[in-house]
Image 1 (tube, one colour):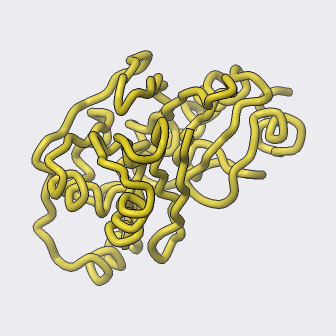
Image 2 (cartoon, rainbow, N blue to C red):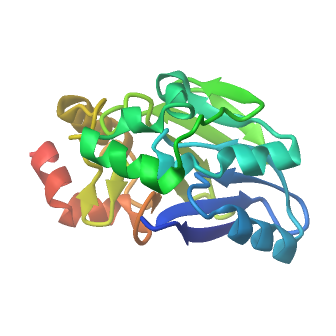
Image 3 (cartoon, helix red, strand yellow):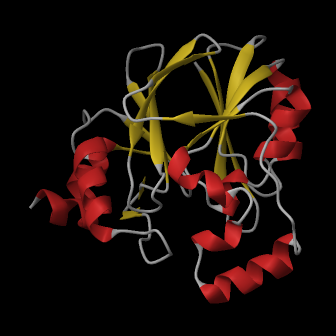
Length: 225
């Protein structure tokens, strides 16, 4: 399985392009700010054709290029219903000071949805580009946060974790819509409930594994304790 990882934008949000193999179909996960050009280069390099854009949550640094990429290829964008409103009102997902900065950074709007939006739900299995992705609803960072889990060629689970968990840390819960109690439940279920060899591809920073985070991540150790 091919997975290209592309940190993009001022916040270095990770965009991923997974595919069963080169020279075929793929999906694009979390294309945020400045993601369109590097995604286009990956598509050309590996001769890939996207069939969908998958979003782990609605924050602007993970979705900003979703409409541009999806509409250019005529494909849908998958997102949880609870975060769908952040397409047109990105400031709703951050505090007032950050919202003012967003207006300066992104322009005054109006902001638009992608042409085709598909709402995902917990437990749903998406069959896309020859790969199956299981959706787990993981609220806490945002109300509509989800993770997508698939398996590599050798059977190892691979989790596109968004801002649920990072190497050594977890997603923040102090923005509007954040919920520390929901975050703890999501981490306990989606992360601590997963096999140790699960490869975690987070929304920021380096890849890790569930086993490594179970043993060393102080936030997860507190929840497990």
